[in-house]
Image 1 (cartoon, helix red, strand yellow):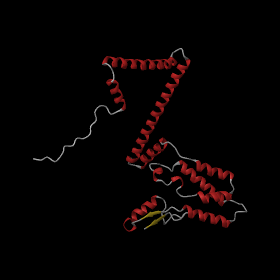
Image 2 (tube, helix red, strand yellow):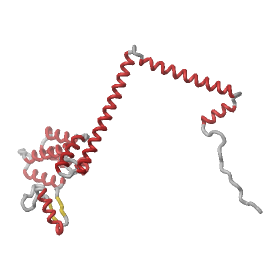
Image 3 (tube, helix red, strand yellow):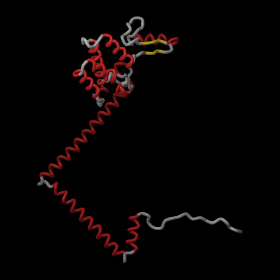
Image 4 (cartoon, rainbow, N blue to C red):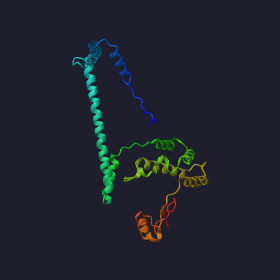
Length: 261
């Protein structure tokens, strides 16, 4: 019977494949005897250990009790480690408190429980907001003229400035974040300054046009309640709870507060 198929053998390596392994293999191969190789290895190890010992001795001399620099170095290192440990522990405690109060807001059964948990969560949450825009607005109010204020507000007054409309910024909070409330108060103050200005260079028509343009650029908030045919009674309850009943409350300057569909 003829066998036409040939057996194939994969490639395989003989001996070490790394550079270090090949170097050791060549040293062993060209060494005269095993005892001589052992002697060379011990001599190399003793040489490296003596060098390491000398280096450690020079460094350990700094830690001698009679050396004030060494004592100062030890105290500084100990204080640094203690401070790092204290900071890590404080951060861990704050993270645990935030997680605890966050869980309390989710599991609260009454509004009072939720309000207390939200207040404690806001107190324990670090404030890492950039107040650069707020400082810039304050500087303009103190240093610039009314026309400059109007010019900058036309350019900068947008609804979602600094992503302040992000729902995550308001989730689990009892009040509006302080930095956002301060920004709103500053903008309100400057708008009142424009309205109450008695400058002869600023006509009433210009004020009216500025307010109209600002209102169009900033937009107006509206509460939309859909499904009035089947959920109308619930919508009325929501509107009354928010104190914006369309039958009794007046329409504010920024437009109708709610719309029922």
